Image 1: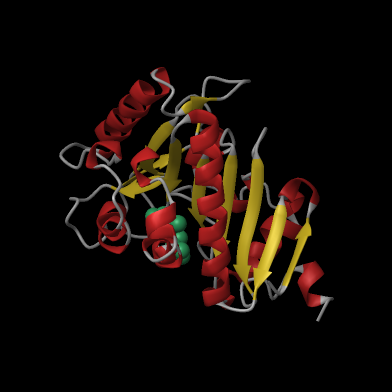
Image 2: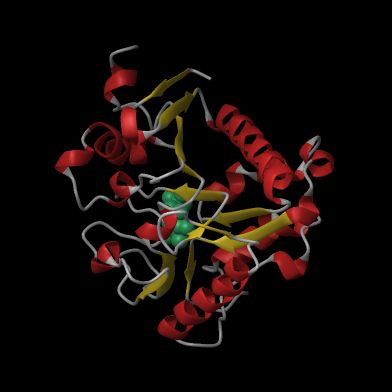
Length: 265
Ligand SMILES: O=C1O[C@H](COP(=O)(O)O)[C@@H](O)[C@H](O)[C@H]1O
């Protein structure tokens, strides 16, 4: 690791020389959390993002993790999904299925994906219902201080504009506080229709990782980590688990504008 530090309530920041080193550390972090959750709760409930994250967790499909991780205890969700058919090129499910899920022995019944036959609103309702059933049986834990689900791990990517999940800068969905899952039909990044975890759900997780690589993400990382107070509509800056841990995984390019990193070079 090139560098790591604790950044107050912005969590722990880990910076790596390159994507290869980042992904090695990221999969180790995931495997450790999986082991701890299985020991404590008997299951591991993890929510995935789409985009570049899936490539970065690919090493989980290789030795030693393919043998050492207790895959039968994994329950998989999506922090956001595009409202398209599951075999559509834009589907986050398809991406994860092809790049990860089809290569490890996670039980198909433990994978909770979007209903792709209904509207965005219907898909958000159905996804909420599905998660509610799993909260009832404590496959997904519940937050101590609110009624939100408490995922063992929420894995977020971050766009160059600072979006996380399908929560975009200044979008009204950022303010949604009643629903666990909401929908949007005007995403600034195509495709326009999406469903997404809301901030209260993300911030109720036991562990949240924000993973970003490449120079195009450097400005947003700087704003979200160093200048969060000045940018109240920047989604990545609003990720702040109330009773959990936040870890940033950045490569040196994405970290290049961070105050601590710039001045250390
Ligand atoms: O549209 C989306 O974008 C973000 C970021 O993607 P990346 O390829 O820049 O890492 C992703 O986290 C989200 O799940 C996806 O729907």
